Image (cartoon, rainbow, N blue to C red; front, top):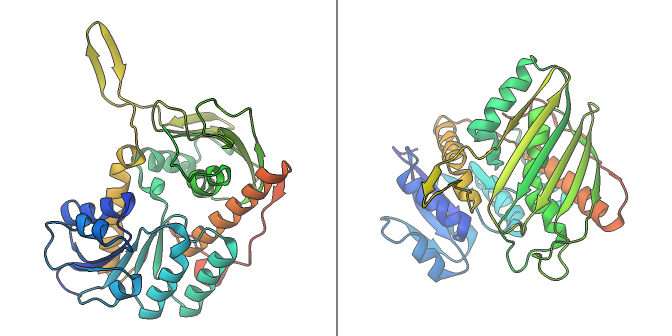
Length: 341
């Protein structure tokens, strides 16, 4: 491994381009060695001004490019399975954006492939584990001073949804972050899902069931509820309140800049997840680079990615049926007995 970790970035869209910027300008110890995207113009734009970077239309060509020692997958979810398996075949460490693989069957194939290697290669990009507020809440719950957690109340709001966003994606794309955060905060698996649907907001596109109210039950007897509202119109908001036997704690109350002008005062509301979680993404990628350079893999594991996909898939079934749906997980391979932090 050279002085700088050579990273191939797969995907040059909104998320991928931001990771290219992050690797080049924010993170230490790494450089962008290759970028792959079917849209050549978009890929070229993402790497404009960078030196010694090759651009490719196919992911595997980027993995085989000179100087590539690790992979950051930021392509659309359906492309993740093939990219992960290709990276495993080459022994390349991976940071894969969520969802690891959108469908449970594909996620299980990735899980089994890494388990056969007998060692971890992939970290899954559940960046909330790297957010300062979430980390403080996790430490507080682990400390035990508030007693046993009883409930988590969560809010996940977006300004607007992309044109191709579906009702199912509110669960398997947006709420997938809350799925992982709840499993991590409580150190419990989620065992069932129910989805309630109020009358859609007038701001939601025709046919989109937005907002939704998602309820999870856990193996330890806690409840987790999530209000997901992806066309709220005013900002990007993520909140979480833990209610425990001896107290409660809440994060995400928008303690940002307060602006006063023309006789009025107001707080800034982030308009995008890349703004709200900028520090978390920076910390996540820096941690991955540091661990990779030491020959280690830390953070959310392929098991965490598989479990999130299984819970989300159950949630989509619950959305369609209106019934409470149980979550079924495959036996956990020994490689993942201790969950990555």
